[in-house]
Length: 406
Image (cartoon, rainbow, N blue to C red; front, side):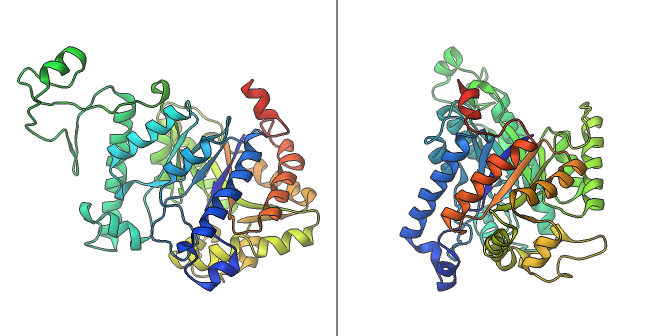
């Protein structure tokens, strides 16, 4: 099992966010970069798979200041030697897929292939609709027609990115994109005939290609956060994309995993239960259960209950028959239903043993809400690295990454 860090890079502490407009403060943003650099540097030395960042815009409140995860990938990737960096994920409906394929390919070259890619449909209309207005995401601004359009764009943009990464040159004719556009007469056709391709005998452009390609022309590992429906999981598994689930109820999660396994088999991949799947949980470890609970109460719960729950994210912890707003938005809900795993090393080991026995995933992403005090976050990271993860994977431990690199 590979273990990575899933960052929701907030700026400042809880008290800074409560003062208002934390996302506009340079001092808090630089503090975030410094602290994440130390945390990621530690993980880079201890065998972690990678770190991923969300994509969100206009978060002046400070809860997730992650405007361009690809830039964050490059920033932290240049400070490390072993880990992979990627997006969890880039919101495809509002992106230009060719530009995104190019940008990730550039980072892939700069980091010698230490990248992965994650794609999402997006759920925040404040920015998805503003940035996606050129593809019709402003009208309608919500409703089933809007959701159907986002899914159409997501799937077509994914297909375009895969063509860009797997073919020297390509064309595409879809509902929303024509690549290349019609009747482009190429003034440098003679040069392209000699040294390139994609131009026909009439000097018209019939295919385009990105340059540079991804490192060694290898498609990065692919992830899809958050896969909450069996339809999404099946779509991802059919395309060798790893779905990332945050659902916590065993019965619902079991159905999801079976759906993924069946979809993989239908596409010719005979996977074990849990293979090709990923799970994400917040993990907070301290010397004692009491200390860990006190920290966890002020960690992800503040962001989750204030900024995620209004969008229906408590569907992640719902029981069969419950809706996303049927349970209280409290730390107790998150803790009792297993979205946050907290305690001493012994306690966390017991909780993870049960979870990973039932759902033996290939990837585990640790939610890290970095408005938690940095020293406490580093202590939690040290404890989980040395006293928890070595019990579940041989990938994590002191100096393992350095040894693997050598």
